[in-house]
Image (cartoon, rainbow, N blue to C red):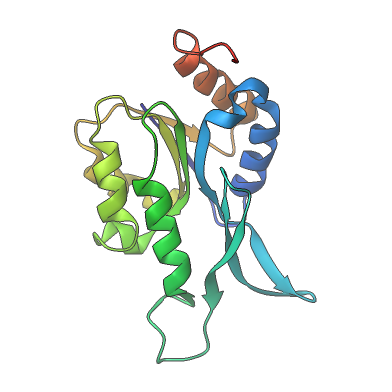
Length: 180
C-alpha cells in the first residue's frame, strides 16, 4: 500500500510528518526512510537536509544554486553524497517497515534521482510506505504507479493528520509484533 501525501510548496507536508512520527508511539521503530527539513543560514533559506529516520542523522542533501556548473533541478542542486544516502536508505528498506520518502519531484518523473531505487521497492508485493509530492505533480506521477494500490492524502484536508495516522495503524493491526 502506497500513501501519497500531496500539497503545494511550503504547505507544511514535512512538518505534518514530524508530528505524525511523534504520534505513532509503538509503531515509530517500524518507520524508515527520510524527511527533508529546511535549512537556513541566519534567516536565509539555503536548502534541505536529509534526516535518516532510523539513525536520526542529518546530512546535507539539496542546496539553492547560483551556479550553472552544478547539476540542478530548477533553483536547486542535489549534493551527490546526500542523493547517494537517500538512494541507500530506500534500497535498505525492510519490507515489514513503513518507508517515508520526502519527497519526489521532476527528477523522479524523468526516471532519475530516487526513482530507480524507489520503483524497485514499490513493486514489492507487501510494500508499505508514503511518498510526499507537490500538488502539481500528482497526476504525472500517478502514471508511474500503474498496478500499485495507492491512497492519497491532501495536506489541505482538515483531518489529513488523523486520517494518515489511522491508515498507517490499519496497515499494522494484524502484523504488529509484541515487544520482546
